[in-house]
Image 1 (cartoon, rainbow over the protein chains, first blue to last red):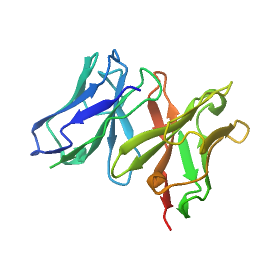
Image 2 (image 1 turned 180 degrees about the vertical axis):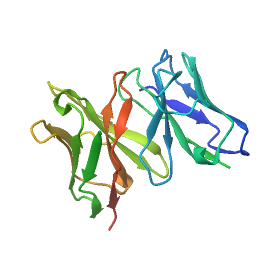
Image 3 (image 1 turned 45 degrees about the vertical axis):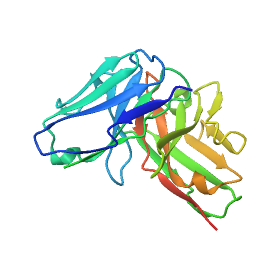
Image 4 (image 1 turned 180 degrees about the horizontal axis):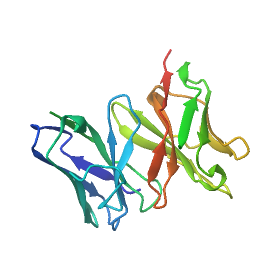
Length: 106
Length: 118
């Protein structure tokens, strides 16, 4: 199985800051990576697919990049509404394992 | 509007069983690959099981293989997860999710809570 790691596990930043979350895969997954945002008490919501494609309706301050084994999710100008836990997921092969998550706080 | 509505969660003793259901609307269910994913405080999101669309093949995480069974009723637009021999570490919020074009998950239900405790 492909293992996913994320860093940091928790991140505290100010409104307006640039926030960067890193996700690493244990083997190459090309660009078969998605990012999800999960707010407390809510279902996960896909925000990025194929590593860098932004889902319809997601604010452009969210940006995904990377390929192979290393990926980043950048939030350009953190907003209070962005408080959530962010997960990466590989779908290069079954099982589509998730990273352990990064909790973003203001 | 796409909707996925889970039900069937609850409190169960270790070794017990539960059946989760997920009623789906707003998509062509019979050709959609579907999964169950769970969220725990300690492990985050964990993919549990998947079933393909029209010629159903099933897939399981090692942690549930032999104990959980995924199935679907394409007439009732419903996804199921039969869980047996439940353990404390199966306690989680269980979500059903529809696979998107790339194998990621583009629609999720609101989740149903399973608590395994004596």
